[in-house]
Amino acid sequence: MQVDHERFSRQILFKPIGETGQERLANSRVAIVGLGALGSALAHHMARAGVGFLRLIDRDFVEKSNLQRQMLYDEKDATAELPKAIATAEKLRAIDTNLQLEPIVTDVTWRNAESLLTDVDLILDGSDNFHLRYLINDVSLKYHIPWIYGGAVSSHGMNYTILPGTTPCIRCLFPEPPGAGTTQTCDTAGVIGPIVQIVAARQGVEAIKWLVGDHDALDLKLRHTDLWKNEELSMDVTLQRKPDCPACSEGLYEFLQPENEEETTLSLCGRNTVQITHSPPQNLDLEKMEQRLAPIAKVQRNRFLLRAQVDENHRLILFPDGRVLVQGTSDPSLARSIATRYLGG
Image 1 (tube, rainbow, N blue to C red):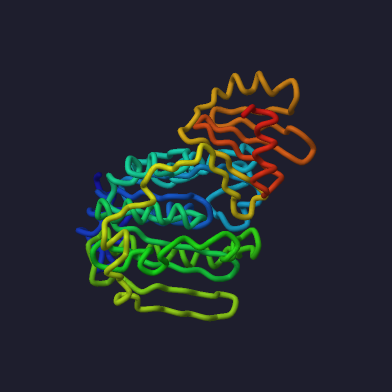
Image 2: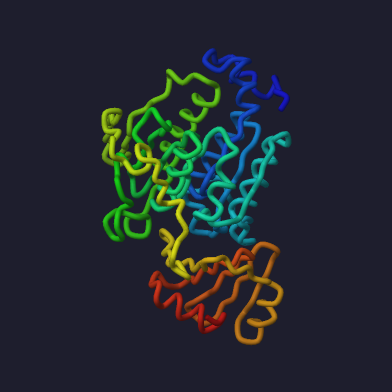
């Protein structure tokens, strides 16, 4: 990709980047997993910095409740309920028409993680659940691709850069994903916008350091910030690389193994929504589903999704890849019951 010297003149003047670093950015490939608050901010930073190729991956769509902290989106996106990957790509194209953007509306699972995340130079974490982060971790280690973890909830956030073979991986620090109910979520604790921007800025600058080749400048500490309480904590975790870690020491990529359950439910953070997916995936014909549901529900469809208000309190969102969101409940059992009632089992 050709460097636009006028556009990036002030960044090129920054000596740690310079002409050479800007060219490296232009020829870099980055995947961003999750385009909510953190992911959309990361996408914005990477686009403005001149990263040549961005793969934008998200399963979800823009809602009004996102606008308080997901600063790339606006009311028009929420009204249209655009998939976040599509909305992000549209915003970034308006910033720089030379960017190569690949928006992908999907859920990252063991089935597609390797095809989505292995032809890039860096993976950025904008996700909202630990299971997905452990999946990213396995891909990173298996294919020796660095990734940068980030998380924000309430007024506090964390970030950490993982370099396969050099730093402890996430399973060295946290051997298993935290169990349900053991960590705060935006469902229970809320989240303020400024902490998102701080975490995304730290992830973003580490990404730029890596991509321009200034690896000595990388911050390899685990950083925690509580913005409301004015607290900062940095932890040197370099000695916590475990010789018996199943992922980075033993090469057991357990989160890339096939799932056994026929159906998976996931309560989405802060949404009063449950996502239902089937294994193996079952593609949905949205046009046929519209015809089926129209007599019994208020239905709207665009080329990305179908919305069906099935009763006063519940709405179904159907995606072509077979995912179904049940809005109006965070109870997986009730969500499955509603989905089965209207879609079949």
